[in-house]
Amino acid sequence: MYNEALQIELKIIIEDYLKTQNIDLVDLIYRYEGRDLVVRILADRPEGGISIGDCAYLNKEVSAILDAKNILEGQYILEVSSPGLDRPLRQKQDFLRCTNKRVRFFLREPIEGKLEHVGIINKVEGEIVSLDIKAKVIEIPVLKIVKAKQEM
Image (cartoon, rainbow, N blue to C red; front, side):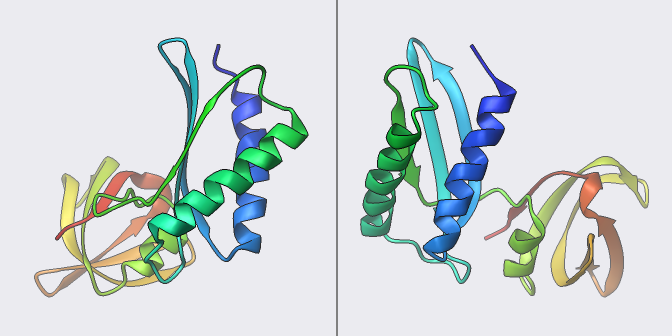
């Protein structure tokens, strides 16, 4: 059974711990896959480059924290990994990390007649991402972004 309140509590606990390790929570997925409850954490360093060793360490530590708090009923599978090359861009810090990089945006509503834009992020101010598209700059409110990913 999916419980939104539990997912929010998990996010707060995990995010608070990761901050003490100078690591960002990129995404948290909490769901049943078959009979198994899976808690999947995508984590990265603010400057990028989380290692496999970091992920193994975080898995052990987060598992101990979740077990001590006893907020998950029964057994669960915990996975900690890096977001990889296809990392989702969701939060302001994700867009800041991609300044001067090529990004594809999918929007909730059209901006300049399009739901999809590809360009170079030239700045992020407040909740607005400025995107340079062929020497033209458009401003995209973060709330209008459905999905974004860095282009390689």
